[in-house]
Image (cartoon, rainbow, N blue to C red):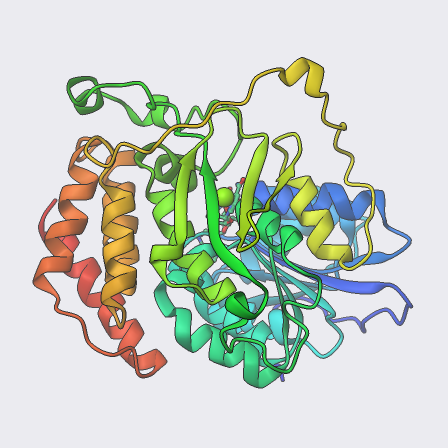
Length: 415
Ligand code: NAD
Ligand code: MG
């Protein structure tokens, strides 16, 4: 499993406990933080076994001191510096086994002692480690929506073959999961027209509308990354905050929903709901519409996915409907926010087009955050890259990764 090259620092054997061993890919991020919060509430049931971090390694060292994981994964060639920092700042802490690079991420995700993997790396970088967890048949809590967008069919085929348990953490998909019949994912017919069998007519995916919901096109031209990262209802990482502001987050979630729930894009409707109290809804053929509601706090879907089919305390205050008082719903404006249309069309086109959409979006969002392009150029760049890269069947991982790289190169040339 491990080779000497990948192991930096001292090793120690995994603790043999009756608790579930949890691996958090992307422990230093917003979802990582919320996951650790929930795990702390239930330390009698869950053990923080492995953590990964990418850029904020000082923060990862603090997490090691606090949670004492058996393994950590850091970027390639960062292991020695990380061990030194940990030893220097926390001399009493036993150094965990330190793994490096993408291989290190795959190793912690598929480690035989791991029961649960939280997939919370942002962007395409999370695909292969998440696939490693799926292939190893783990209980996979999926926050990293980009993995599913870029490799949907391949990803879901892998889930079916490996018998992994894939549980959605994205609040909308977790809400939909909660509104579906409990055997939706458990029957042998899984993935075979399951939505029709369950009597689902459509899914209503709610969107807050983001911080620029009421901005006109002229105002949108002038918005800054600082404004885009100030979401009205959620505190999140920078990339997803910008995605929420362009509504590409909802576009990515539309594709995510199609794969998770085996539905065509025509049966997923986006509803703008500024209060973010209803996290999504499922409509049935008999006229029923089921919704899942709660305060906007990612600890709820994380706790749900961790404990399902049981329920555990998430540390989230119960919803006070008297305080909420009003729930509003609007149609999304695809002229001001073209990203939903781009994502729907990419899903309809299929093959490598969602891969290209995702890659071009990642490049454009990073350029916007670096103040190299304006907000309204994000969808223009994505559309231009999609037009330049005709759809090819996403036969295998190599094809997907090739289109991801090519799309990034083309997007980069447009900046
Ligand atoms: P974040 O930016 O706060 O954290 C990202 C994590 O990924 C960090 O731990 C970082 O070190 C790691 N990472 C970044 N680049 C990496 C790379 N190249 N290799 C390995 N690790 C890398 O992001 P977040 O808000 O926690 O979001 C994480 C994922 O969860 C995203 O896919 C996002 O769309 C999804 N999600 C987030 C929320 C939310 O409320 N934050 C809600 C739903 C879904
Ligand atoms: Mg979401």
